Image (cartoon, rainbow, N blue to C red; front, top):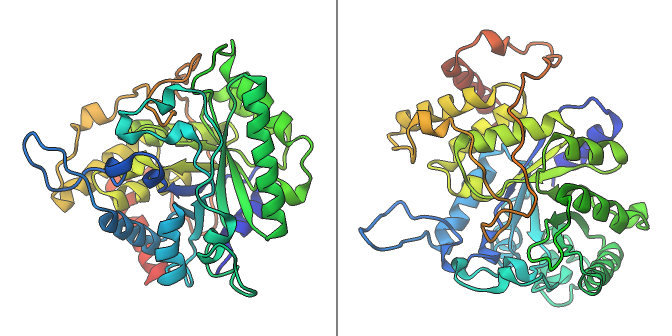
Amino acid sequence: MEKSLDRKLARILADSSCREFIIADAKDADMAFGLSAPGRSPETYAGEARFRTLDEFRQQIREITAQGLVDVMLMSASSNEVLTINERLFDNSRVTPAVRANDTTDIWLASGTGYYSRQPSQPFRTATIDHIQCGRAECEPGQHGLGADLGLYSVTFNNDVDLDRRTLDCYRAFRIEAETKGFRHFLEVFDPNAPEHPPADMARFVNDNIVRALAGVTSRGRPLFLKIAYHGPAAMEALARYDRSLVVGILGGSAGTSFDAFQMLWEAKKYGARVALYGRKINNAEHQLSFVQFLRAVADDQMSPEEAVKAYHAALGKLGIRPLRALADDLQKTETVSAYSGTASPGRKPPPKSTPASTPKKPAGTPDFEKMTPAEKVQWNLDRWKRIVG
């Protein structure tokens, strides 16, 4: 398997000015939302909810992997068994498979009708590392490489010493097991989901808990990167500059407008984030492949968020797909939420309006994107990927 993810992480750690951004497709929603997890079905029936099937959901994973624009494909252990272990989908792909390694109670949502998300998060793991690596309770010698060797582990601190200590105990046990079995992980830190005593400064509370949780962890047990809610420029800069060995990433949160998705990526990158992990934003897009294409264009500094929205709508028009919103509405900034439950985190403030970023150096042979129309940029990207993937 091509270790493109490892090379990108190495470049980011070696060069503080590196602007390359890792786009990770966090398709792990089948661990949280039940029947509605795969998203809305293209078929619609008046007055009747209809969702994609799990087979349709996995087919979208195949298509996005074949497109090759994301760096990580995040799945449940069961989807990993079907696609990574049985089908060998990632054997000749630049995309790295990853699996949600735990499923804490704050993502037990039952399509939003349950009550779990309004109770303080409790640690829980459905899958074991062996199940992720080989699909069995105990891997035989030589089987650990059959499945994924990268997983997402999530924690939620609720400002409660007993709950948070148990969360850290479980994370420590996971880290030790992962190290002994050669399993890598990245760490997701959710905002408090049901704190009895909400922190006065949510962003500072999350940042401080990340630093404290990892302060005693040596390099062999540390996460490759972080996945956290984006709390704005100041909080992102503070965490990104604190420890150069920490690669900070943002979670996408609820779908919102197309501008929300592109703008969050652009702004978070400007202030120090190097990874974007988008799940619902991709899953709820009218056409996922086109949406991912323009996420990559924004991440690679080829388009501004506004240009990406316009180009995305133009692509939908060519495909004959009716957008969920009119272009003017899809260019609006809205307040989306980061919690799985769809509720805003206490103390979270919307980020300020973006200002133009400084123009990065362009590699030799790169066209002047500022002088190209959105349509020309779309065509340039299509031609580029045709040359790469054939």
